[in-house]
Length: 406
Image (cartoon, rainbow, N blue to C red; front, side, top):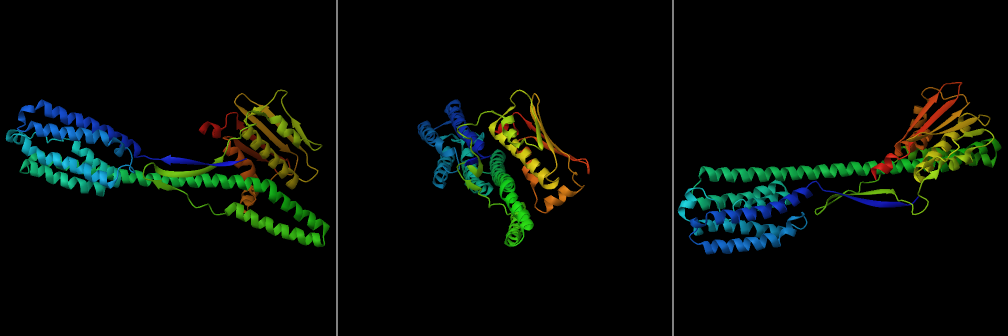
């Protein structure tokens, strides 16, 4: 089955940029509304109107600049803050003294906070503190004295912007941690899939060469010994190999980027298939297959994985129960799931043997059977009584958990 790389972009802060875009437009309208409602307080209304015209054009023209961290450049932030500071410092020149004494708003009013918040979203709490400082100084200059309401407003903007900047930094760190976890999970699943394929193919061949070489003797025995050594080395690599290095990166415009390798959908033949046809090849003189009279349909990928798990169970019967052991395959088509039971009349599995085998790197049950069923959203139950054979029950939902996640 072919593979494809899927890029997952994660950005917790992106909604904050969208909120900032709306905030700038709404506070622009609010500032203009305050000016219109207190028009009599302005000695130089023409200057105020000119400033609001510039502020309107600037706000609307720069909306794309406040939609992501990449678009919000340092130069833009500097000019944006300068526009806000200019409006604050112009206020005493265009309004009456009574307006200032009553604690009336500055020309940009709360629009100024949008400039500071842009710094916070772009660079975190340190940038927010840097931008808040000149805003605080400009407000104190505009009032002429540190009045209570002025100090209150300055501290509020300072604390709020620094807090938001800190939250953004924490969100970015959380994104990177989550992206790393997803990368490790994807790498682990891919390694488990490769382990199953290797176990079902290469390791089985090496084990067979080792057994046959030992029986034949001579040069074949040496070949069997080498095959056995390679089998042990390969099992060790499969069971404890290193995970690939994470490919998590961080894009300022889109947040953390995770590149996951997943199975690509097959263009043809990916519809439901009859499980009976895939299991029929296992039937023989020592393997009996009992199946429903009607087709047992499953998604193509799920059917192949379930059939491979059945094959792994039968391979365990041949290897551990002996060539004379018999096996039975029972297929049950329930309303929401398919259950396949593989039973044999061998000697059974001694208690603790499965855990020991997994520790030795023999992953037939752990990966080829349980791993496959887990990936399909199903389960694999193994019951074995010494002297009474082994029974493996494989349950797969007709709509697999993997399909649902897509």
